[in-house]
Amino acid sequence: MTATAKRPTSGSTSGQATGPGTGTATVPETGSANPPASRLRAENLTLSYDQRTVATGLGVEIPDRSFTVIIGPNACGKSTLLTALARMLKPRAGQVHLDGRAIGSYRSREVARRLGLLPQSSTAPGGITVGDLVARGRYPHQGMLKQWSADDEAAVVEAMRQTGVLELADRPVDDLSGGQRQRVWLSMVLAQQTSILLLDEPTTFLDIAHQVEVLDLCAELHARRGHTVVAVLHDLNQACRYATHLIVMRPGGVIAAEGDPSTVMTAELVEDVFGLPCRIIDDPETGTPLMVPAAPKRYAPTTGATALAPTT
Image (tube, rainbow, N blue to C red; front, side, top):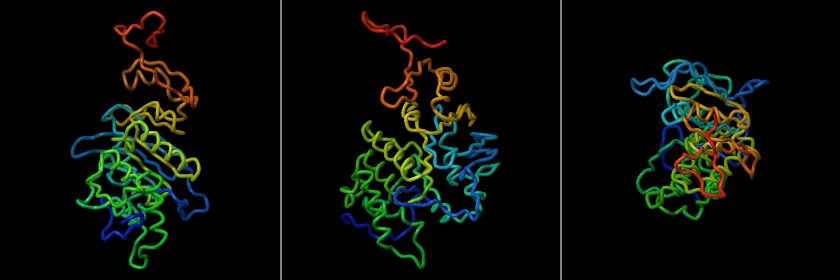
């Protein structure tokens, strides 16, 4: 295919048609004249993989129409929480609520019309082209009485355009670099056109320029189109630059702090949660918190340079 998407012959490659949206998606009706302030929240979750408990008593509320970023050390439960919010992992205890209802009470297609997930790793069917993979993001909108339409095609083309992969539409996904594949998966999520986007490390495999492109796109979806974006990131400075709401997790699935990055991100917090002495200064471009690691003594600056002393 060129810039025209074919209707896929099967559903999503990852269970619930993982993929958030762009375009002109509107907030779904909740059946109430006064919808909850937080469309997506979790209460008292116990999360486990096999027999290993990752978190207990975990509760979060995702502010509606926020750009929420979850940060924390490796293996603290960031991705596990995101997976539970997407209904891809069933809690051993507690409940996730979406639009005022237990998320488990929805049919899979209903969930996929309301939120989309970009998982940490994905596998495409062998030989599938970029355009056909992105088109699978339209799976939740298909049905016995709803066939592939001009609106579906437009959503797919726009998603590929926004992520810069439109010119790759005819290429097999197998032939792409890691960074190109990541942008294709993001395109599939955007083609889904949901108003809640869950992104698990969306900048994985991307060089710094494409990392900024992807995060700028997410910020635009949030600011101009009213999407609720929830992303797991490792880079603390990117998190502070883009987030309107920051959730900091520590090992054991414990929420260490949350709120506006300008008040949450302190040198004391970084050292307490990450074990890294640092200074927090203002980003010269955005004014948001910028974390600067303290220089070890063995890297003392030469004459004319100024050392960053560890905070106490």
